[in-house]
Length: 465
Image 1 (cartoon, helix red, strand yellow):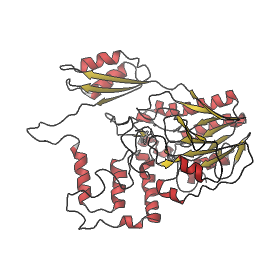
Image 2 (image 1 turned 120 degrees about the horizontal axis):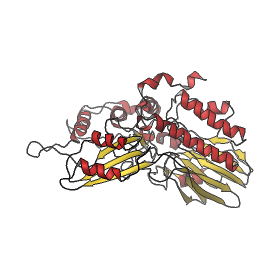
Image 3 (image 1 turned 30 degrees about the horizontal axis):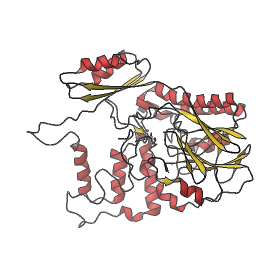
Image 4 (image 1 turned 90 degrees about the vertical axis):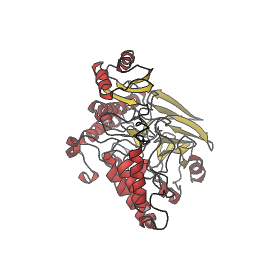
């Protein structure tokens, strides 16, 4: 029998809500999984991608991760992993560095046999590159085989990569697919194999309300998958429905009913009551002991109908319309969406644009041709809907979303309204007050920019290789 912990989407280094404590939480959650692995004496820890939140992790995050992995090394528990979309770049990977240090094994098309099971890896692959895959893997002589990968697979929600196609086209018969990218755990039977997501180890977006954890997978006569939760920082989800003539006092009264000590307080305001100043509400929640407080007033605020019929949402649409009038190429419109309006973390925009331009140069050079003058009259939308890039920059909720630069548009937002770049401030569909929007996946089922002071602490692969 082979028994492994299947984890992923640890997003070490994610400074959610610009909070250093939240950054520590993500590393602590990963360490908790490793501690369980050592205590349980499992045969391996299998990581399904997005070990780091950013392609350029800070030194403190890199050092913290190395320290955690050394615990596995001392216990002779191998760490097997693939590359996810948050960490993928052209060339060398941080995972390669960890492998050079003897702390990890990067899975690929050659089998890595642990006990009686052969493990293979398939890194995150952009949508534009998937047609080139041949799914050829080297043979093995183990009793069982598992494929570890990172992506949004059908038949799970938000899937754009067919798990059944992978399982039927591959040259190896797999008993299980151990997946990352979707931050919501789940398992399904596909083509005589178990296909399972382990979920994220920390809440990377507001819609990730279920307990965080990992999978324990046993390969014996049958494949069994059990889920185990881990303790994480409390999130307090406070909804206030204001009646007529009710205002901030009613909001405060509702907040007092919740235990906020050291919690992330996410407060939603609904109803027909009075206007409420979000900053005052956040300040009150912090006074009640919350680590972080964010307010989302869901009530639609519109200008006086007698003065104008334009709502406060219209400025974004006006920008999109102006962009459509400029006769830009498909590539330019897509890159505009990536830079200006997508949920990509600011720290990931540069790499997303660089990678997307490289893909377009390789595959779709015609995409750089300007739009024809006679295609549509000024102000008339083209075939691409407003705010939507040809390949789609936005991600759906509950999943990971640096896929934004390479995946097609997904329905909705993180909370059914979807997973992020399952990673913005982390609140899917709930804009923060006083802070720039963050990304989620929480397909990412969640990115956010660290403060400028951290820039000098960031490192690239070139610093090491």
